[in-house]
Length: 190
Length: 190
Image (cartoon, rainbow over all chains, first blue to last red; front, side, top):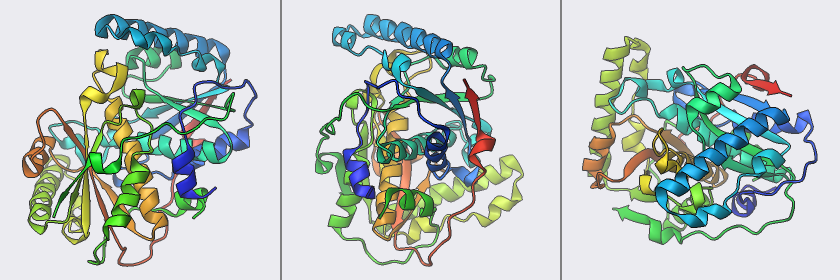
């Protein structure tokens, strides 16, 4: 698939078919992930590929807890429609875990290490594009408390669960969701 | 360019030719950026396209200040070779600025909003792949104090300068930098 087509037609998938994904396909997606740039090429990512239904159930419970909390805090009742059943439905969830000690020079800055998380997000974007080119849908999911996901997935306190990536065959083909025009988002400092 | 080729052959560029980049090309790169996913499709990014040499100079001074500080703090004398002259050399720098109020439900979580920064990083990865497919080099740069970049670029305290993306024609063709094997980075929870 052409790069620009992949970028333009990829869209977030929230309804998956249960069809299993074979290991070579998973590895192809992860291999795209590790080609992302990272501070000083520290490659701060680790991947936990989850097919175990009991783990998915725990993650789903955590996401629904956070969603209920967000609705309560925000008063955004329309969030009611954003159910997270895709966490149970997707054949695989990939937890992308970052290492703040692999954040390059920014670990010494006042703002604290953030480069390693951005590198993980860049890796996820590669993974989502790769999944799309392989006719799979994906979702970049971050609605959880890090401490809870650490406990569920047995991640040490020194690492950061950055996101969960749901991957699977989409239930239906989907059109890309519109974006605001680039001009509305850009200023030029000539 | 094929998606997988783009992902595999893109590499970080630290030496640029001074050749200007025309506006349609810049817009094509930014249009790839805005196709990234974001929490609740909030599109939390803004782009400041910098060609003004005086601004580049201020950014370069800030990066060199941070680098000197990092060397002092870390004792990593080998960081001495990582000069940031590319900030002066690249024909354009794109500051990607995120809005923490456009972070979806994670603004209500204990961990604080982070989804908007991850979305900006996903947008940057799209931009870097697009630049590569257009025969341009790019660099994802984060060595600065946010408060200083806010002042240099007149960004409000409510927004986060997430990264600077240097873009231009590479001085020389470059081979991709090796990565650790995917297997070394992955565990399976079946």
